Image (cartoon, rainbow, N blue to C red; front, side, top):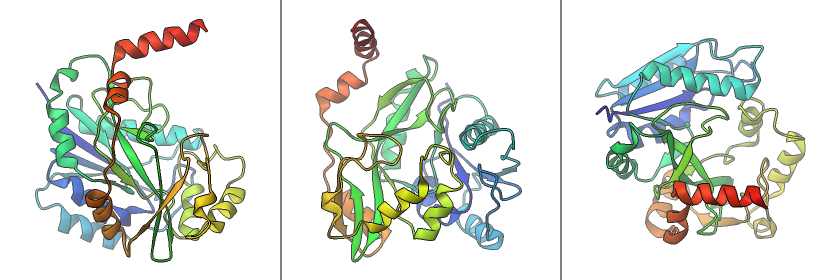
Length: 297
């Protein structure tokens, strides 16, 4: 049975974050594909600056086992929306890596705390590979902002973790990494350096990413983000920019760098997941009954 671990990254203007994310997964992946727009255009069609010399020097230093495939292509289609270009690039990248095995897609700003454990978990579930389509999701720890002496991270309760599909046995992408497959939730956490950027870097992200068309007002939300600091963060409630109820509150963690923050999160924070709740969420039969019940009422 083909149980290869195939990892893809969509690479763009924030490729420097690969310096942290790529080494975390490198040793435990069988194939790695980095997809990069050949014209250095975002999914919104905007050109971005890209230091090719520094990028290739990083790849040469990192790819000691010669497992990285740099896939450059035209990933911007004018007739498609930003999220459709996002979906298209992910699908082309999965096609490039070939059928079979576990297809994992990670963004440059996502850092696995235990990728080795995640891979071992996937290899223990090889019966999924020839079965029904399934996504293996991971809980996210989202870094919201760098403030004086530390970081603000999203503080989720143990039963309301934000999750994202990372691995799948059937690579289809309808809304970035999301699709209609059944979502099984793992206990392997990923730290997401999502909004923790400078104001200018954040503006570039919001004008370039797949969710570019999903905002009613990016400018208004940026003003809100800029106003949050080390002291007033505790008054913020339900602040996810695209979906209500996902981010309820913030937590302050004292750290001088992302590396220190990752170390603190990994060693000093016990992320509990309610086992009974997780069992039900991962049961196809329970979810089928729940869906029927909701339709009835």
